[in-house]
Amino acid sequence: MVKAIEFSATGGPEVLVQVEKELPLPGPDEVRIKHTAIGVNFIDTYHRTGLYPVKLPAIPGLEAAGIVDKLGKGVTSFARGDRVAYGRGPMGAYAEERNIRAVECVKIPDAVNDDLAAASMLKGLTAWFLLHQTFPVKKGDTILVHAAAGGVGLLLCQWGKKLGARVIGTVGSEQKATLARQNGCDEIIFYRTDNVAERVQRLTGGQGVDVVYDSVGKDTFTASLDSLHPLGMLVCFGQSSGPVPPFALSELAKRGSLFLTRPSLMDYVREDKTYHQAANALFKLLASGELKVTLGQRFPLSLAAKAHQALEGRETTGATILVP
Image (tube, rainbow, N blue to C red):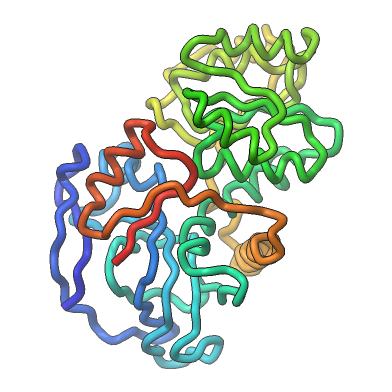
């Protein structure tokens, strides 16, 4: 029997309960992974609350690292004992072990430990597509990153700086400001006390930024629009404060023919070749030390509900993992 975290109804963190399940042998083209570390992400809370509907009962979690324990028929790309990670799903990572298609797995370099791999796959792939695909950041650009001390935010700050951008970040405390600065953030805005758009305009001499990376949603949407220069782009890739309410498209024209997109990682890495290219590029930067992941919190798998409480309460910094 395998211990897993499951929810049978949508709701708060309390709907997450530990269960024991029988795990069948891996099917054709599948591998069985014994998890050593499991990534916790905001999308997990969206699945739990029903914001992103899923079939119930469900085991949350889209990313993890572990060791290949069994091979299904036809699998030749891995051997028992290989260290692997995945970050494209499907759901089911909150478990001691799972079966998953071999194509979802990427070998972990020796220089990257399992905790780091589990904490970085989904967040790192998200930062990759946001900075290289959705809005290709180039030297001289100015970018605004909301939740700059969060898991994705810290990677956006580092990677954006590496690409030559000036990075402005919003945070909620001095502790988070220090962390964001250590990870490449040039300018800090305290969203609880500052008028974000006014501060951005002052910092940019009234020009505004080229792009806003917004994972917060409802609470920051208008300020994000008002922080852009004409023809700038707002990239809404999350909604930790709730979904953006309906608005008139004319608001984009009124502010200078702005661009707005709501991208999803799964669309950008739906092709297996692209997924593996992005994951290998991420691991190369992590192995070389050019990109660093801040592991802020570790919870036992059995305390997944507490991990969700901390994440939704904005009590976390960097990445959060569960340990089976």
